[in-house]
Length: 202
Ligand code: FES
Image (cartoon, rainbow, N blue to C red; front, top):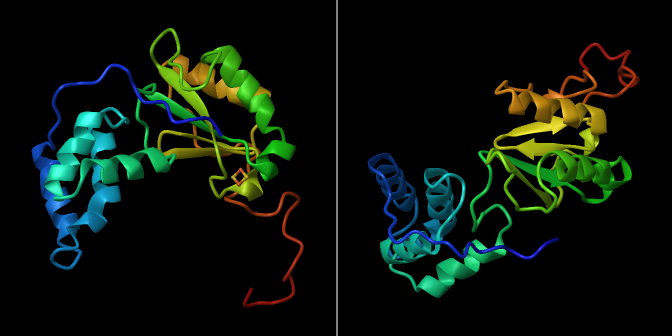
């Protein structure tokens, strides 16, 4: 796993837009009084969504004030969890799972495609500014390994060729279809179902 990259270039200001301000207040109201700090992860996530999928330091300071907690505590949370990006990412953000089940099914071939077609190094934005990629730990779709996540969608049962086609589509401003690339419905067995066939209630 790579170290968290914190952007050297940082904006000077951040505040929630109207919609996120309302959402933040609603999230906080889910917790007992004086326990508003429990909302820190949700608020970091909101800040990331609002700011092109990365969290600047000034947003952590803003959230610290918002929740009446020390900035260092917000910083600790933001730097600990891999789902928070602390530097700009591409508009299309590829997260390639390289944990064991995906690894033994060819995840590093997918990493090679990302290196070839997006950028040589992870967390580096492609020359056209469109995409970036990084390795991540298990995304919970091991049955459909190898797989990766692009923004909010999972792309599964991949190989090098299939990933190249997905990236080509994105580069042509088309939207690739998420899900299994071997035509499976969700995570059904590969060569049709073999169990519980005689049970009417199955
Ligand atoms: S190991 Fe890749 S999704 Fe679980």
